[in-house]
Image 1 (cartoon, rainbow, N blue to C red):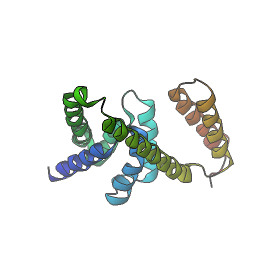
Image 2 (spheres, rainbow, N blue to C red):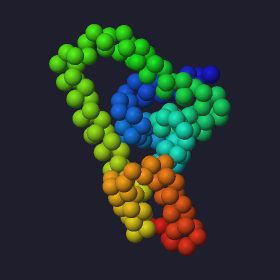
Image 3 (cartoon, rainbow, N blue to C red):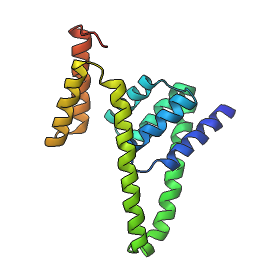
Length: 181
């Protein structure tokens, strides 16, 4: 029970600090889950994140659920999910109560502009960390460049891009026998 409470507290603190969605959360998850608590390796975290991207629902929530399941099976999955959701529910209720009265104030608009800038920085940090671990050879560079190009210049669903990249990775590394650096 003590470990489940710890799991709840950790994911509550992640949930309360995660502004900007799942991509912004990746850097924080890497520091807390991988480096501080060692509940998952960086590779496992990237795998959970990729699966969370492909499954229905919120990426950050799906990833939290996968990590909780790995750590403490079904009770861990439920606990991590509730821990991650709790701050969002509290914050949404508070914002909804006050937003209608204060949304037009310049100070509120400026605060949100600052938050958006911070979210961009957090996403860039996550991209750089993931890139260092994931883009390790010519094949991974090609997959990366193709996906970035398609994401930037087409309207192809990100889900389809993730699935296609997974298939390409499988074909390159297992079927064709490419050796990873």
